[in-house]
Length: 411
Image 1 (cartoon, rainbow, N blue to C red):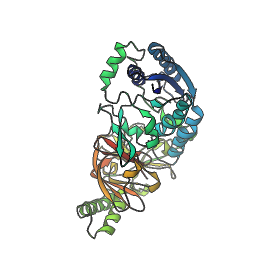
Image 2: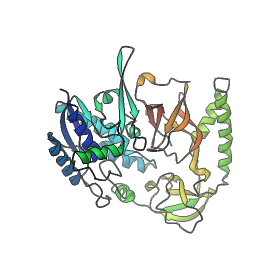
Image 3: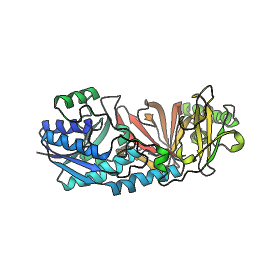
Image 4: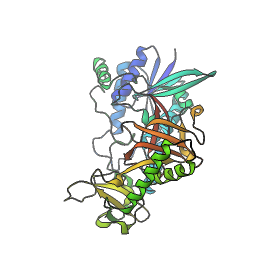
């Protein structure tokens, strides 16, 4: 009988995952990990860790499975939170949940589970795993969850074959209402508990307050860029060239294609001379591309959105309206060392191009795009211009239901 250690988080999803595994005949152990102690910036009442542990223990007792506890806060701070602070300091927008899965749940936590004699580690993620025999080797595929509204495969986009080898996702074939129904039927304490929100294991936070643990507030100026800014016309020229080159891919247009990709994937660069000062802020590193709230500037026909941040000069650039051209780009770039393939055997080679469906943030509808592998980078050229492409976020690409790979977006 295989032994499965379930990461009991105190939520309904991991609770039902544990129940299903026990019903299937596995030897199940519940393991709760505490990853964060500091409550600075945490909004009161949002997923305090002690409540999480209490609910996890109640579920383990109800299911009559052993319950264990492990404190991974030191590793979590070093691998996830310190990384997050450093990224914001550089004006980038990290995704701590992706890092948490790669560095904590399926690395440090996995090692703790193996110490307990686990054959597998299970979580309450809404995704699936497929096992294939290909050319005499076993290959693991990461698939989107059956519930398209809750699919969490994006958060696991950095997992490796070795990590997937041990992974189990018991609720991946279920819809969320079905998970709730099972929890209620089994009288699990988490049946009606709200889903957690915010930063993985930290909870919902006031981000500027949270970041001020390491990043000091510093007043700077907000400048508005008008839709008529000259740089947008130049960018549009590159877009036309990119579309033309894409149609002729494989012909003698390599140099033009590379130039247009470079241009399309490069974020807009503004200076204070390009716009008018309309307000002040408390630190450019507290804001991200596409953000609407927190500017404190009203009296506009349409909302103001952040279209660029300059942490070196401590300036924020904004544009009015959701259709402002500064919010949209046709392409992005990923450095070679940041390209990750779930199955390395499927990796693209230099000069190769493939069509995939891509998302650049959790729950974003999948977008049609062409991936183009160059010596200097992987370029993703979208069929439609994308809103709010932010450096530091992860782009994940899918082949049907299979999450094939991912990479960190370069600024």
